[in-house]
Amino acid sequence: MTETSEDTSPASGAEKGEPRLLWATAAAVAGFGTWLLFDALPGINWVLWTGAAVAGLLLFSRSRGEPSRSVLIVGGAPIAIAGAAAVTASPGLSALICLAIVFFLALLMLLTAGLSPRSITARFAATAPLVALKTAAVQATRRGIEATQLIRSTRARAWVRGLAITLPVLAGFALLLAGADPVFAAWRDAVEVLLGEFVARMVFFVALLVVVLGAYGYAALESASSRTVEGKAPDRWLGSTERLMLLAGVAALFWLFLAVQLGYLFGNLPRIPASGMTFAEYARRGFGELSIVASASALLIVVSERYGNDDGRAGTLRLLTFAVIAAVMLLLGSAFRRVWLYEEAYGFTTARLYAQVYMCAVAAGLVMLSLEVATDFDAGRLFRRATAAATIIFIALIYWNHEAWIARRNMDRFTNTGKLDVAYLTQELSPDAIPAIAERLPSLPEPMRSELHRAVRERSAARNDGRQRRWFEWNLAGSRARQALDASLAAP
Image 1 (cartoon, rainbow, N blue to C red):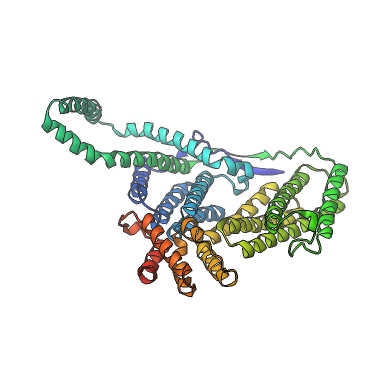
Image 2: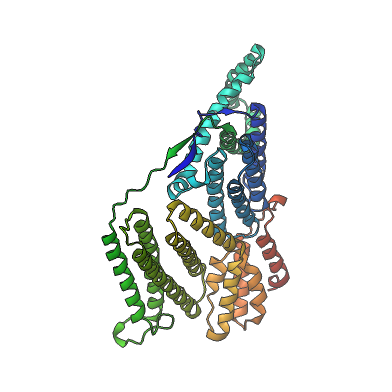
C-alpha cells in the first residue's frame, strides 16, 4: 500500500507570504482575541474570535491552492462548537467547548500545512494539541528572529536598543525614589493601578500572539518535497485459530447472558428474593458493567481486525464478529433502558443523561465498526468516522438545552411521586434551567412552590456578581434566565 506524504516540518519549506502581512494579521487576530476574551464571560466572543482564527489559517494555507473539503470541514467544526458558548450558560459545558475548540484548531493547523486527512489517526489526534503548540512556538521564535531583519536602518536599531536599555533603568530609579517622596509614591500607586490590568492584558496578548503567529507561519510554509512512501502494514501477530476461539467464546458468553436475562433484560428487577440487590443497585451497577463490556468489546474487535490473520477463514471470522457486535448492541440497549428506569424512579440528572449520550456514541461507533468489518478494515478511517459521529453528537448536546429538559422532567415527576430535589434543581443545574423552572413553577402546590421559588432567587442572587455584560458577552441562556427571573420569579 502506498500513499503520498509531505514533509511539512518548519525547516522544510519556504514562505510565500509577505512577513509584514503575516505579522500584521497575527497581531490583529491576537489583539482581537485579547479584546474579546480577556476577563470576559463566554458569549458570542468565542465564535467571533474562533472564526477569525480559522479564517487566518485558511488564508495563509492558500500558498498550496484552495483548501480541501476535509480542511474546510475541520475548520468549520470549531466554529460550530464555539457558537454554543453563546447558547449555554453551563460552566461545565463551557469548559468542554473550550477544550474542543483547542483540539480542532490544533488539528486544523496541522492539516493546513499540507498533511493528508488520512494522517488523522487515534495517535495523531491524541498528540495534535501538544505537537501544534510546540510547532507554533518554534515557528513564532523563527518569525521573531526574522522580524529583526525588517529593521534595516542603523539609526532605527539604535533607537530600539536605546529604549530597551533606558526604560528598565528609569523604572528602577522611579521605584526607588517613590520610597523617598510622597508625591512620587502617589504617582507610583496611580501607575500601579493603571498598569495592573494592562500588564495582565499584555501578557495575555503576547501569549496569544505567539500561538497565532506560529500557527499562521506554519500554515504559510510551502512544502519543499513530496514523496511516495510505502505504508507500513501492521504486524499481524494474532492467528486465525486464536481469533476464532476468542470471538466464538465472547459471542457465546454474550448471547448466553442475553438468554438468561431475556425475561427482564429490558424490564424491571428480577424477582429473586435472595438476591439482596435493590432496584437502584440493579440499574446503577448494570449500567456501569454493561457499558464497560460494550466499550471493551469494541476495542477487542478493533485489535482482532487490525492485528489478526484470517488464513482463509475470513467468512467465519466476519460472521462471529457480527455476532459479537449484535450482542453488544443489545447490551447497550439494556444499559440504556436501566438508566431510563433509574431516572424515572429516582429523578433525572445531567450525569445520568451524559451516560446515555455516551452509550449513543458507543452505538454509533459500533455502526462504524460494522461498516469496516464488512469491507477492508482501516483503523484510521474507523477513527475518523467515529470521531465525526461523536462530534455531531457533542454539537447536538451542547446546543440542546438539556438542563431545561431535566428540570421539566423532574418537576413533572412531582405530580406522580410527590418528590422533588430542590437542592439539585437550584444548586447543581446552571442558569440554562431557570426558564423551565419558571415555566413549571405555577403548577406546583404549596409549600413546594414557595420553597423552590425562594431557592431559585437565592441561587440567582449568589451567581449575580453585579457585573454589566458587554455586547460580545451576550449569552442566550443567560438572557433568557434574567427574563424569566424578572417576569416570573421576581415577586416573593
